[in-house]
Length: 448
Image (cartoon, rainbow, N blue to C red):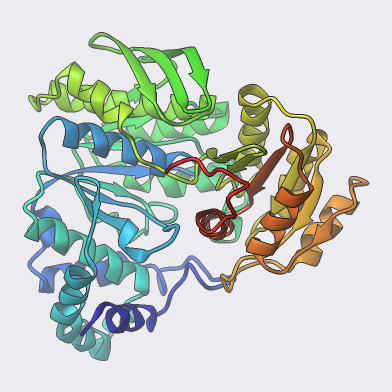
């Protein structure tokens, strides 16, 4: 079996990421199905120590920071995240290196008989694409003899396929409205699902939350005898300097003060970095040595594209995976704070299940020149949905049915002192990055 055949096999199962709508119910999300699969595979998820991360925004960035610091400290570290920008292989990494096509195909071929047997029996329903990918990640980490696995939740937390790990530390990053048709229509309902990763008597790092979510998480931790470490209470951060390449800042932790630099922009990333420091300090408290200089090095050499990423300087071309109203607000604030520009061009494409009007409302104050677009992903919303949303704010938007066309049009219209921003979904950002790799010589892309 080669990589193409392996990927085709994996995608042949129920892929909830590609479904426009689905129900979050025990029939489709049942951890017993995952536990049965892992038991048949020898429980590879128990082979190393885990850090488990849930939240609406920032969980991938936080996971990447933690993994980078652990690798820098000399620990073989697995990182499992989702979704991906360009390749499924991005989801499974060891020490920053993607799983190879040959290794991916080999694991799929190995697991195939077990999966087919369990699906024929279907004691708890048939396995999904995400469940198989999660099992493959655990198998790969076991084969590579990783000492740590940093695991990002796919969706929610309580019933997510990753919620089979018993982590040394759990993290709840910022919780906001997203996947409401799946997780609930109030912040409290969403937070309760995310809090499903909190295990009895565990250690939990909590990023800043709105008051009702903070109260709920504190109550759940108290009920489960879990100890909380809170960003904004137990650890504080302060910005020092930033340029187009990144930002330096200080973190006042529980164990000391740190002068840090990350190649990411936006205050929200400083919040994520502080959560990562909280985790690393907690590991150190558990006799897992992470020297300060290795932590600093890990943060400095972080590679996490698609997050307020600068692809071109004249004109400015920035891509960001913001895909709900909260992240759109953070993006708007960061654009104003980090960049100087005259006109603002916005290339926007979204998934059909997102609150598009809420995102548009956040971006409208920048008075953008808008090109609505759509990715190749089956969940992509029609461009008309986006143009109609902008029309409600008296902004006339044009359309381009392909992301590459939309970005090319925006860049052609923009002058050297203008800014073009591409946002709305991971999938749109991925296609914009692909366009930038083939861009003509008159636009100078920033090296990723």
